[in-house]
Length: 244
Image (cartoon, rainbow, N blue to C red; front, side, top):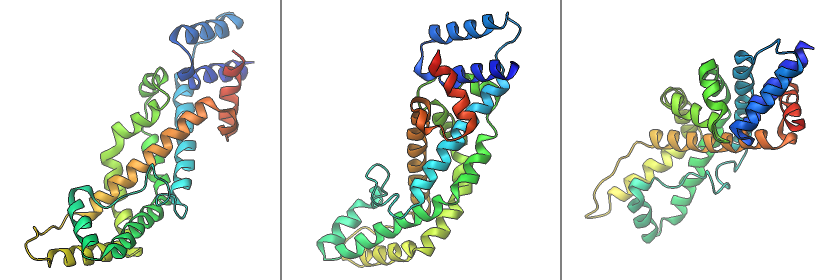
């Protein structure tokens, strides 16, 4: 019986983004009233449920991103030529080096796809730092509140951990070499202002932005779509909320 009550309460928590505050309170009151008021909402289970929802979203988002063309053919997260040196791309295309530019952009995205395979443990480690108080703050947030919390509180740490992975992947796909070649060819053009931006930092940030976007989409999906609840805990959590 206690397990049923806890399951009902967790269901309320993880489904709260689809309800008003008043509806949330009514559901809580109803569950507690049904047990004679003998229990209270478990904050530990709230945090545990939110952590698991984020883990599911991260694993699915990372899986999508790490597939061949996961970045390159997804217009939402495809990594373009660095915007701060867009003049490099434009100039190189004008002098007949468009194919080389295209090859670089493809290998840049291949590097992000390769790095995404290693993202899960980095993100999961960050998720484990979520406190019970954080979880309750997320409870009344938007459909991507958990993802935004993760982005807000862990971006610096994740960037530091992810950059070596990205650097290795860019070298593996030859994106670093192709970019250096392009920049060197550009710098040899008469009268241009020479450039040498940090490709690792740019690719790391763009790769992280893409992963966060996919995680946010999956978080919203888990909250709203029963089919997306791929673990027993998530199915238990949300089934009661759907019946409320």
